[in-house]
Image 1 (cartoon, rainbow, N blue to C red):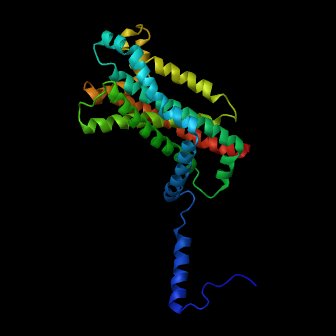
Image 2: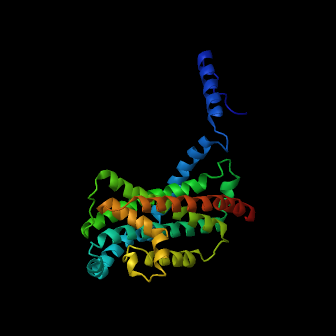
Image 3: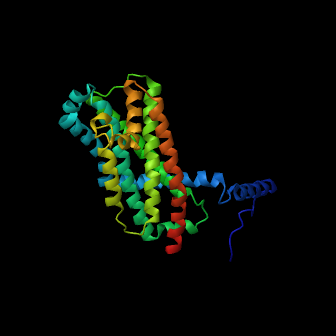
Length: 290
């Protein structure tokens, strides 16, 4: 009884080809800690994250449609007042602001899902499989890139309805999208690090929501920095959202770019540096605790 020999009845040449194929498959498996393993394993895990996100209809609607509705609401309620005070079309502050807010609140939903999956033991099961230790974290960041990109394009289309225009050419338009992605990826990595390090069921949403709300209301998207109290102006000018908004405004409508773009790069690098290691350590802790 036993297994069937696939080489029975085959010619010598066919047997040799079959053995060569099996040897190639065996040697083509990358080592667990290699770059090739990290890249090959991150991609299907990223697809899994995207599928989970798309199937979660309430979260999908909240992440894609609510920011667009918020943008229209800001324009209707605050647009004329901001335009009268600044002499500029408020759309050039509102659209970048809402793009960043959409990126942040979508990341909070993803962080909540990660914390919930830790509680189910999924992270522990992934950790004992022969896959790269950073693959799952990378896949979540990759799925966030896809979400932020789609959201940004939707919001730019909605912004066109309220007067937002690209006046600096195609390269600047691409640069604006890249700034949104850089900010969104940095914030997403930070929230994922907090989510995987926190105990299951921790109140992630209230704390992250509070921090996001503070950033959302104290930046140059709502009103110019000079309109804030003098003691608050340095904080508003240098918090992560303001240079991103000002960079996106300059890329769309023109204006000074270098200083704010430098701040965006610095903030992105700093947030990633302080987030990646705690995130990887959080995966180890999640596996041990389970």
